[in-house]
Image 1 (tube, rainbow, N blue to C red):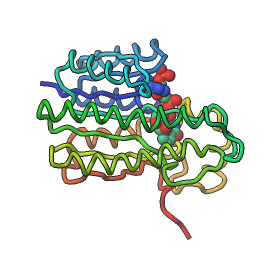
Image 2: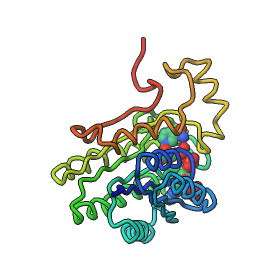
Image 3: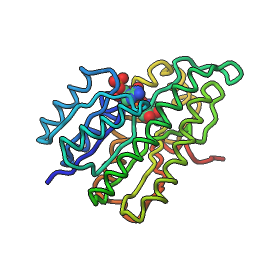
Length: 252
Ligand code: NAP
């Protein structure tokens, strides 16, 4: 019988690539998205072409009612959840200096990037325990969990908080045979980074930002999720996997 994955923010970018890769590995997929129904249905069709079952489920991860409905619809369709990928996330609409940035952006980012995955994980973990599933939970954080960008403090704080959520859930769920992982992407070519493409082109190709001199691709992140999904890291939990071209270590 196929295993089931619930992937948030699966309509575009990194979440889309993760979903397609998981379907190729034999996972049925619940494809969560916020607004972009056309893109979500395209991903659904690709999953079905791989021979797997797919459900597209709209819902704002920042909304308590939506989170409950996302989990309910997934369980009603597939019976259980073996893998949760907390991928949905947003960048600030405007990059503003921390002496100027407003509360509305802070609230939006904390709600979507931190509160949403934290409480979605709570719901899904309870289901995994109820159905006696030795599941796996993945959080897509960012290098912004530790790298300070003073023009998007809200984003950095949301990702730093999410990094702690990984440790908390890893510690709490190990006894239930549920492993929890953090994947920290670096600079990945998606819609999110479209507006800052020229800046990162220069940093990567002219300013030696990363040892591996190229943009990351959504498929690079998907491969790390596949390793977890295929149970290739069974004795690791609370583990950070950097998918960043080597950005994270100091060089001299
Ligand atoms: P993206 O291309 O902007 O796609 C974002 C996805 O999240 C879309 O599927 C979107 O759905 C969904 N989404 C947005 N708000 C949502 C909400 N409130 N509830 C449910 N779904 C929501 O972003 P990406 O670059 O793939 O980023 C994916 C994750 O990787 C994010 O957590 C991001 O912070 C993280 N990350 C990205 C990079 C990078 O360089 N791109 C680097 C490090 C970490 P719709 O299509 O319906 O709008």
